[in-house]
Image 1 (tube, rainbow, N blue to C red):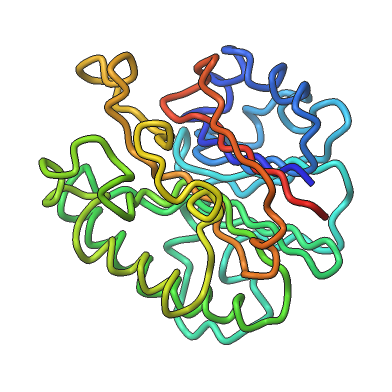
Image 2 (image 1 turned 90 degrees about the vertical axis):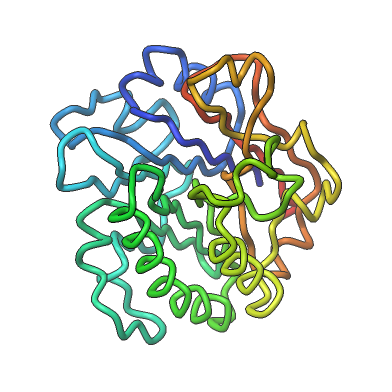
Length: 267
């Protein structure tokens, strides 16, 4: 089973740059998308359902903003749009403000759940960083419930957190910046070490540095100089993570400021 996750920074822009054409050459079973920046009325037939795939989406209420999607070859048994729609596990917090931004979509296939996730960025200022911390706090119990559900689960997406120093080029200069704050890194450590999820890329490549990046700023020739961050992940329950056999980050073409993360699982 091949799963791809890709932040498109606008599905219309990425499509114009060849993303869908490339995607159809990959023989992926599931493709998770983030940052659609589109509403249903903006989507072309090819964007809604590329050849051989079904498409499911969680659009943000705000036009041209956020949004996630999933393309899959097989029809899911269930599609869960947003966290407030979730019916398994104990979610005690109101997720309405998160769902308004189109940040969570889950497709269930038998005992397998595939989630497309777009955690907020806090880089634009204190207000958004406060919101990011709120989302992280409310989302952790859901991740704990998913882990305890007995299902095979993989959460794909842009987490907007570089976990370790090897996950970004200039870690010394970013210790006070959103995406590499001590609180964010500790949250990710809790998820992996205490709750027991597995960062699949790091399982396969525990020591990768420069080769691991999935996002580059549009400023200062960051891409050309490979001054990047690893903020796109596939995080899986342990039994599923054990079946991961190979991974790659596609950089031969640029569809957005992120690169697609591809992982193959022996299922």
